[in-house]
Length: 89
Image 1 (tube, rainbow, N blue to C red):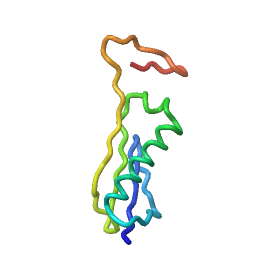
Image 2: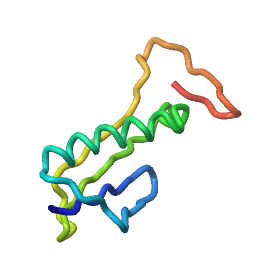
Image 3: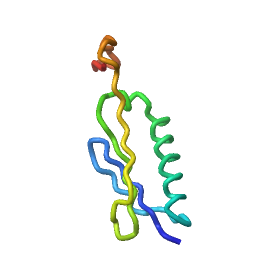
C-alpha cells in the first residue's frame, strides 16, 4: 500500500515526516479532509486571522498529489472586530 504525506503551510511549512499508509488516492483524499477538519477544530480562531493555509498531500517520491486550501473572508460590509488585541475583518 502507498504512503502519503500530509504537509501543512500556514505561514510556516510543517512537513509530515512519517506519512500514513492508505490503500489508494481516494482514501488519502478522504483522510486529508478529515485532518483539515481536525485542524480547524483545534484552533478555530486562527482560521479567522485572514491568512490562507494549505494541506499538501504528497506521495512517497514527495510529489504533490493535491492541495486543500483554506481561508476565511468576511464580507466587506461587516465591521472589523477585535479579538485578543488583534483586529479582524
